[in-house]
Length: 246
Ligand code: G3P
Ligand code: MG
Image (cartoon, rainbow, N blue to C red):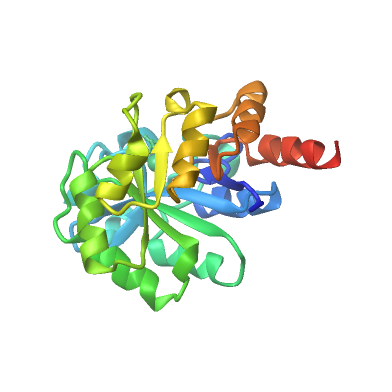
């Protein structure tokens, strides 16, 4: 059976400021085999990795990502809010993460943050950039905006997509097939073992988020999910190793 993908949520965000190169590097050190991150676009069209539409929480700047040019955004300190020891961490460009991933076997889950700000055209831009890096099977595009996922498949049918959702949808694998998605990025409570099996029978993977509790991590692993998105890749790695040994 395929090894469950250990996705570090925004990098190793329990230990480092989320969505920074420090968090991505640490994730690898802690045993992550995948990285989940959030993609947005600056005023001058650069693709950057940041969760909130506003820069406020992680840099102190009250403006929105979409209203700031990259030259200004890249000068902001995205580390100090977390701890002084990360002062000077920047908001990374998408290409910085792809560059890091290139020589690894990491699976990269790019969440398009286009639910609030629509970022028209971002699908084609992200796809064109990931194609340049030839990461192929190792890229999964996800979004809470499912129209965007349909558009991704229209642009590049070979690119994998994951449906982000919160609720207990009825037979979500049927929905996934209807929009040609590859995976269900379900909120952790919207996952039951029989659904995981049934989805797998239809070729649809489950990648629940965001699971940090050790008991919950183990429970979902035993359900046979294909991947888990966690702030603690070290915890998931330790549980996977223990189960493997037993
Ligand atoms: O992709 C999983 C998870 O990151 C979705 O929610 O708000 O953490 O981006 P959020
Ligand atoms: Mg996310």
